[in-house]
Image 1 (cartoon, rainbow, N blue to C red):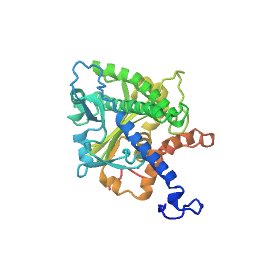
Image 2 (cartoon, one colour):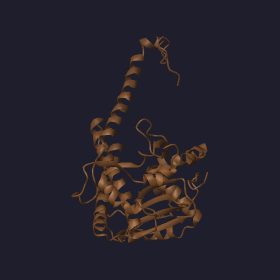
Image 3 (tube, rainbow, N blue to C red):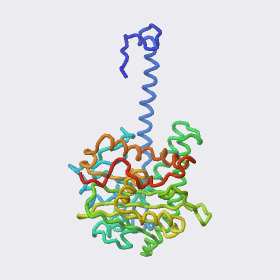
Length: 360
């Protein structure tokens, strides 16, 4: 839109010069937007929570560090070019961008562990090759849970401050979103109690899991979670226990050496609820696995890192399709809850219009 000059006729049709008509109104609107952006950035900075999520704090080091939810030296460094990677996560100066460039030292970081426990707890996956042990699967899942729980806690803090700062009613879209985030924190807290007990006792068989091995190194990595309400045939998942327990699937994917691995895991207590979905996932062939991960990871997580080569070689259509799944996930969920498409199946294993597994 062309900017109106001070001495030009006002576009409102009054016949007056812009400076003597709507210039001041325009200035107020611009100031309001600028003020909003400043407040947003301030709230985004103030939402930070520094804590160690390890259950026993007796050996905590003094400093809470910016821990990586995806291994930095082992994975992110491998994906980076000139010290940079891409993420499907906006920054405060461009929160709606499909992709943004991040330095590898800042990508996937969260202030959820002290320096001591971040090093000691995750050594079996940091310092050893992945060999599919119960302990390694547990630790990948535990870090996924911790990072997402911490993220939701910060979202709650941001939301509560924003509701007050902008005087938003509780029934507004923002207020309802914050209500959902609080519920998610409660769900994670209940699950973390089970994880913490297993971690402290060294009993890592509290999880069920599927591990997929790909015979080539992918150009991305990340972790995600979802609380599925429908299976791969778009049928509603029923809870035979008739309680309100939320069941999560956790997904971690990464390249290592000349292969790649994807871990899909869940608490054993969730098996009875997720059994049909789990069996469907187990039955997927190679092509369907790739499609399932292309959709599920992007729809459920902004904690993905990509090599610049992968993103910069995407076509405009591929990027647009990725953006639709990444940023329009809530529309998809609403669509699949509608009566008109209850018979739709194979959506989660259909090609989404981009392929993160291509070697470009």
